[in-house]
Length: 444
Image 1 (cartoon, rainbow, N blue to C red):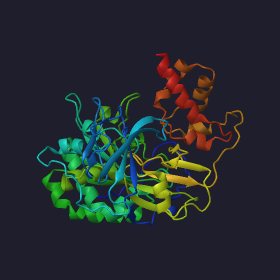
Image 2 (spheres, rainbow, N blue to C red):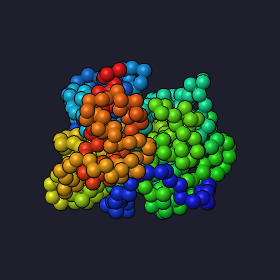
Image 3 (spheres, rainbow, N blue to C red):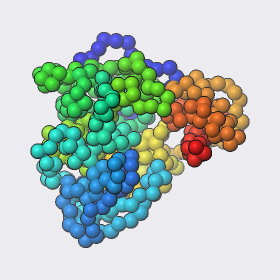
């Protein structure tokens, strides 16, 4: 149910233009098969998966083509019928080098059929089905969901939070799922709660999604009996529109009044958090026996001619989605995988969609203001949602005092960009913090 409470929020944060107008009212469109798909074998946390096919092999849509190479990893399936053409090396937007499989598709230009895929074995537990589907956290982290939901004996999940806040500017993938697939999302959330053996579920949305809230209320009414049967209570929590409202530590504190300890995870506070897209993927795995082989991607920004929300097969390239969105109004100065606050710049339009690609943002102008010395205004301190001292941390890193920065909780930095967004001196704070973390870990 939707609780009648005041709009919840956290201390700090910033208010960038949410720029949702590009895509908010665009229905999800399915991308026809391109001539080729480039399937990265790094599709989330952990080592790259190991290819189980050889060049020249025929593969079917939904057929497993790679399996985890270590304890943490995920299964990868072919998103289309086709032939393994070659194995190459690519660089993902996060600057991660990854092996990749090029699949020449059998039916370029064809729209995939809803039931035209190799199904997961349904004679498995729901958790095993999630593993077989290759589901990972689709909000950006990419941690294997079957591992996250395998609660250790010394831990207990008391709250399950579904993050549908989508606070990143420009992106509308989760919003459109709620508008068009609310009933399926609620069923997926119930399945997740059952696996976690948790009754108390919070579905968190920002207050700029009022029409999605109406869809959710209707879906909850439709699934009231299912929730009762499974002893699951879903409470809709309306959050103030602010960035980074969707950060997991902020959500835990705002919704449960608990605090995740420094250096720990939400489960250490009795909480599991999943992105809405992950819950929808769980629905498809359990109700349709469908593996994760496609996802909704917002193709957005002021440089794209026709912004769209695209249901794209994994492995489709940025070029495929640009062409499907009618190209550019003018060549963008900046291309981002994700949104403008926490996304990663990329330069090659052959960059493929992976399981964590929530959007592709194309901007006419890149903001490249010249940095000037810090004026000690304190705005970054007020904006930091983790209550750190960004200006001091940056000075320590610049001076090579990496361990001191680590001792002052550098690792708690979420790299959300609030400090950099608000900084009047245009200092590259986030880049500095990333470097400081790397050097601090190396010095241990």
